[in-house]
Image 1 (tube, rainbow, N blue to C red):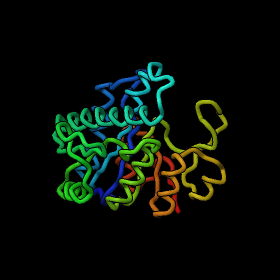
Image 2 (spheres, rainbow, N blue to C red; image 1 turned 90 degrees about the vertical axis):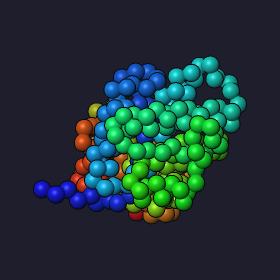
Image 3 (cartoon, rainbow, N blue to C red; image 1 turned 135 degrees about the vertical axis):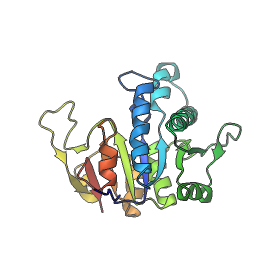
Length: 239
């Protein structure tokens, strides 16, 4: 039976915390290998994949030492953490037989190439996975905003927010056993229900660009592939 992807180009938002596995900080090698396997499965279908990576697994691990730190300075440290994660992810992809490029919104050209939209799109068209690090390159903006921005810039058909929870719930499922998961919800309804799907800036950008979001668990085997094939996995946020 042939597997025909629903999407040609996607933007995958990976939180830094997703790389921790069961740890409290850092990178779990088994976890990152599993995530790369999930991404490879969709790349092998011919899907063009851009990845925005967070840095919470590194920077939050040293958060006590950063207590009282200037907000802009702290944000720059967090951006550097995303570059570290991006390089680690790229190497894990190399070991899996994939070709990936890391582009950073911060200029660190001895380590990674700068973000250039046209070059990123060309890499995607060549079948290479592009990892976008450094957030937006500006303090006070989250990697959620970077995901929405890069998704819009590269012409992604959907933003896939990979988390450790299998969708959007009416309440925190870890605290409220009565919480129910939405199969689909509109942007307007999500706003009216005050559901924290992404930060406000990222959410507004996706809504204005009519760029749908799907929230799913990256730790659930095969979930990413099922999303790309158009199956009912996680929660779809639509216009």
